[in-house]
Amino acid sequence: QGKYADSYVEVQNGYSNDEYGERRVEAVARLLIHEGLPTVYAGDDIALLPTTQVILLDPNRQQMALDIADWLNLEPTAIVTGTKQLDTDPEIIVKLGSDFELPTE
Image (cartoon, rainbow, N blue to C red; front, top):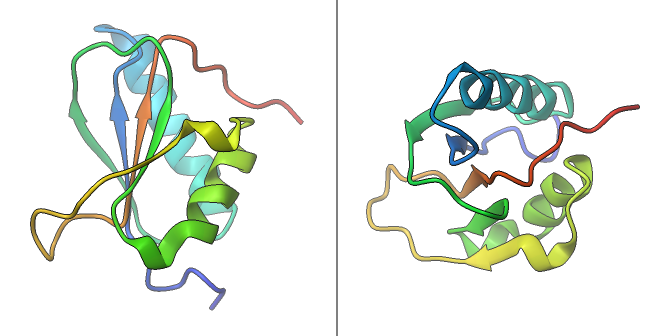
């Protein structure tokens, strides 16, 4: 079922306070599912961010964070290490910032 079959990723809207932010979250979730991540959720809207971040909450998912950054045309420097607060937290949170542009083929 793929190398990330048991993964859990959340995408949050820090892009904009309107439908464009929500649309980007939905598009990124679809893209990540298409790339092989089975469980991708749209999280809550967050405070607007200037730059997009990939928050790595599970140190065993470093390669997945690198793959996500690559799929979203982000530099590896977009990956920030965080800490899980609860066992139910995702392994990775993608926080879309105002700089985010959807990848094109």
